[in-house]
Every structure is written in C-alpha cells, then in structure tokens.
Image (cartoon, rainbow, N blue to C red; front, side, top):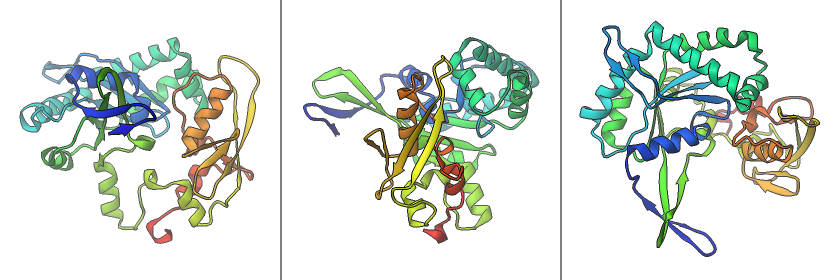
Length: 312
C-alpha cells in the first residue's frame, strides 16, 4: 500500500497484457535507461519465413546494447507461452533483414524526434555516423528484455538456462482505494532489473567480489572516500530547443543525497533531471551518473566503477 496525505493506493492486477505493454511503451526510459530509444512493433521472420511480432525493441546508445522486448504477465505459462514465443522471436531477430528493418526504424525516429536527436548528440554521435553505430549495436546478440508484473521460480529458472542474456523488470500497478480510475505504476529505481543473467554470469566467472554498478550509490562513494560530504558537483546543459547553456552546482550531503537549487534529491539522476527541466528540457529521464562531474572534471560514473565489495 502507498499512503499519501489524503489518499491510499492499493496493489492491483493489470487488466491484460495490452495494459502493461502500453505502460512500457510510454515509460521505456525508466526500464532501458535515459540513453535508450524504443522501436515499435514490427513483423519479423525466421529463416524459413515464420512470422512473429515482439512487443518492441529497445536500443541503449550508451551501453551499445539492444533488447528484444516482450512485456508479460505472470499468469501466462512460462512453458507454453513465454518460452516458445521468445525463442521464435530471438531466432527471427538475428536475421539480416530484421536488423535492416530495425536500423531503418531507428533512423526514422531520429529524423522525426528532437529528444532522440538530443540523446545521440549527448553521446557525441554525429548524424553521418548514426547508421554505422546502429549497425555495430545490432550485430551483437540481443538481450531478452521482459517487463512483467511478478517473477515466478519457473521464470527465473528458464531465464538462467537460456543461452541469451535475460533481464526481468518488475512493474507494479496501484489504484487509489475507492477510486480505481486513479492509477499509479511503480518502476525499479535506477533502471535496475529484478533478474539480470548477464550480470550473474560476469560475477560468477570473475569472482572478484565486485558488486553491480546499479547497487552503488553516492553514500558508498562517500564511505570509500571517493567523494566528500558537501563536495561540489557540476553539470552543464543546453536544451536542443534553444536557449543559453546553463551551469548547475550541486552538493553531496551526508546521507548520500544531492542538494540542488535549494532542494534535496535522492540520486544523481533525479538531481540531473531537475536541472535539465529547469533549463527548459521536457525530457523525462537523464543519466545523472554521466552528467555530474567533480570540480577536477571526473564524471561520477568513473568513481562508481572503482567500488567493490572489499571496499565497502
């Protein structure tokens, strides 16, 4: 249950798969990251011509990874529904014609959408190099991305035995008590999957004691003496729509939160989002770990990469 000053929200089931699918489409950056773009449904085919239509595709420009997206409900059987459907989709997604279709869709979105252009621009990707970058990303094996309302033991076991990387994100629906038309959806913090087989394999093989980057917060950097309390962080931002570039100063607080413009934010990404919206952007997400820098020019994501279990 979620309780506000005068309202209560209780957990509720999704009406159908279409509902969770639409929630993912409208909020994909909260799952695949602020540097991601989302491609709509497209008919793709296996080598023998078997057609299939995934719920969509996501490309994370920052990590240079791409996802075959299949939004699901836990009520659907893993063995008779999810597993055979995803298997067919994965085979079809790796056909040459499929990758050409996806590349063309991504370029079309870039040409029509200013926010997508901004995402490419933030990463220093020039328009002339877009197809080359997309080709490099799509040459890799896709990740099976499954936003779902809950995760069963069978789903975990299936994901861990699949030869492809699988990421499962849990999305929870809440409705206001006695007012079911008022709906809220809960997404994972910092885009973190509930299950990430890629991360599990890396940790198992390396045995270095390192923890996932998504588990590291500013408080860990303070405790590891990589950041200091009250240390100043800076970021510059200029909206693509126009206007002067603005410089923002934020300060690291003792509890690992960030003070910016006389307000306190629990994470670098929320603080960065507040900054770019103050500058006039209508972006919904931004990666604060790659936006904020120390005064000597180090991006705080570089500091995060130094953290390991042994250091905590």
